[in-house]
Amino acid sequence: MIGDYRNESLPTSFDADICIIGTGAAGIAIAHALAGSSLNLCMLESGGLASERESQQLYEGSSVGALPCDPAASRVRAFGGSCNFWGGGCIPLSELDLSRRDWVPHSGWPLSYAQLQPYYERAIEFCRIGNLGFAAGSFLAPLPREPLEFDERTLVNRTFVSAPVLFGDAYRAELEQAANIRVLLHANLLELRATDDGRRVGQALIGSLDGRRGLVRARHYVLACGAIENARLLLLSDAGCPRGLGNRHDLVGRYFMDHPSGVLGSILTDAADRIARPYDRRLNKDPVPAFPEISLSETAQRDYHLLRARIHPFAMEGPVPRGLQALRALRAKAHRPQQDESEALKARVCAATTSDPSRFGVVAEQTQPTARLALEAALGAGDIARAFARKLADRPTVSTDHVDLIGYFEQAPNPDSRVTLGDECDALGQRKVRVDWRLTPLDTYSYRTAAMLCGGEIVRRYGGVFRPASWLAEDADAPAQVHGTAHHMGTTRMADSPLEGVVDRDCRVHGIDNLHVAGSSVFPTGSWAFPTLTIASLSLRLADRLRLLLSRPVAG
Ligand SMILES: Cc1cc2nc3c(=O)[nH]c(=O)nc-3n(C[C@H](O)[C@H](O)[C@H](O)COP(=O)(O)OP(=O)(O)OC[C@H]3O[C@@H](n4cnc5c(N)ncnc54)[C@H](O)[C@@H]3O)c2cc1C
Image (cartoon, rainbow, N blue to C red):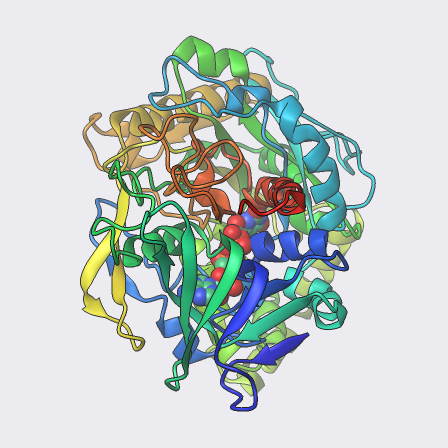
């Protein structure tokens, strides 16, 4: 059942077998796996069914690092979580991603690909991807266009798919109907209170923005609030443990990572279309489309001591004829969504996290009056007819004259890249988050080297001239011009030793018997892979673990 905690007819406090905090991909995956079981679940969700300004404001905080990371513009505080705005990109991790790499400090998961593989199968079902084959590091789905060929010692193609699912929409009915699940909307976790011996969580203090306060008493607790908030909530849970829960070794919030992305350079070529078209996402209309990505080969990673990277080629248009410009602007006006709160937030979040150069430019054209645009389109009917003919011939509507290479990178785990608490408080009286996002020299070295390897290899095979971006062409100390992609990871990393990680290989917080963490905050390293498929896999694995733990008799 789904209820609103602000509703006075509901009790203020609840008992459950498992209290899941957060209804994003991670929380919903666990609830889905346990729906209809004999276990009682209480799920806390800070937001409502759609995004709302007041709930979203609880995500505000400061960004103080070398690179900006606006915590309110890179996630969504509502039922269904940040995946309400996601791109659906899914791909499994590779064996190298999970292994210890001598050249990447703090790398190595305590789990192997073989241990994750059966959960990837279940996660693929959960993400409604269908029965596409997959292997470590790639889907095996057929592609509509042949990707480029490379010297495989340098570059390889890897395939990802776009899942057609928004978890909140897809699983809302199931959560509503499951007799063993209670979802409380507008119910914020304020603090987890440990028992006197500090070995267990005894209760979760909860509250709504309109002042209701209460608690949830559960046998097990799962934090599933995304990588920034999981750390914040542990740090806020400081009654009886001044550094915060699970933070005996000062690791909570450290190793904060994203997938940094930036323009690596341009290839000046008359084969722009040939190079970029196999990777153009607009051209695959399958219900579960599969897309290739150019990825650094494992050989190149080992030989040059690089982080993982994918590089996406975008064919850049030459001058756009006026008639076509006007038609595009008219279309953009017609398709402009109603600017309700949710759409406005979506526009803000997506603009802050995208690197797709084709998204720029259209916005400026939309500001012209409709009548004027219609006249220009009519006068430019010839331009439009020519563009249409090109499209029918499976060519781009406007001729292209260069390719921009956009890189998306794994980030080196870095203890100084971290989430802490600031001094300001939010509307619930909780200290706001402070994000200090930092790179290491290995990151910038990887950008530089990957740009040269990828640009060089494409030019060698397909002709043209590669011009690295100016920030890469300058001296090695030039600041990296990259931005985040809202794939927050790493703040409660997984390790067998409590000296090296916050949770163990079962996602249980070291030293606290009944507290678990779901989501990418447990990732020790982040690959370039979109994180949500792995988040879902680990969550389904955690659900199995909780089922097992709760089937054991309670120690008297
Ligand atoms: C624009 C955009 C595009 C993206 N595209 C992709 C993509 O293509 N592929 C991919 O894999 N990933 C993508 N991501 C990342 C993806 O959204 C995250 O990996 C995913 O949402 C993480 O799921 P989660 O359940 O761990 O956390 P979240 O989705 O962040 O969910 C956390 C939940 O906890 C709730 N919550 C927070 N604090 C509290 C509290 N105190 N009390 C109660 N509830 C609380 C929130 O309201 C939310 O519902 C994208 C993200 C964005 C923003």
